[in-house]
Length: 131
Ligand SMILES: Nc1nc2c([nH]c(=O)n2[C@H]2C[C@H](O)[C@@H](COP(=O)(O)OP(=O)(O)OP(=O)(O)O)O2)c(=O)[nH]1
Image (cartoon, rainbow, N blue to C red):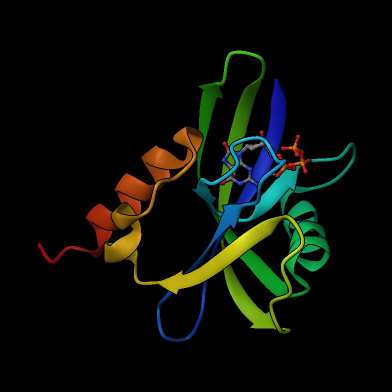
């Protein structure tokens, strides 16, 4: 099982950062919450800070767990661990993605996400709706 961390990064307008995996990557063409594989002896927050710097050139502050989802992609099984994070700074410069968007939580279900992300997407959309 591969452990992967994903950041649900929000800005001051309440928008969330999503990115589309570029051609040549697994799950190419699908949207995701940026992050990556957790290295040995690395905390989830450390992993997310490193990945966002490497993959996008931005700094973030992970502050709270959002949940975990296991998904079997056939050839690999992943454990996707999501944390909420605050955007701190930096200009987005894509390395592993070919597109990015800042979207309101209610708009997330308009994008085709990697299957492992769907429980997180559903929850974020649901939480955005008024009671
Ligand atoms: N970072 C990230 N990865 C996700 C998400 N959802 C999801 O299924 N994944 C999968 C795609 C990959 O199989 C794996 C994470 O790999 P990665 O983003 O570190 O990619 P990588 O460059 O190390 O490797 P690769 O996918 O190109 O083989 O988890 C998500 O929201 N964020």
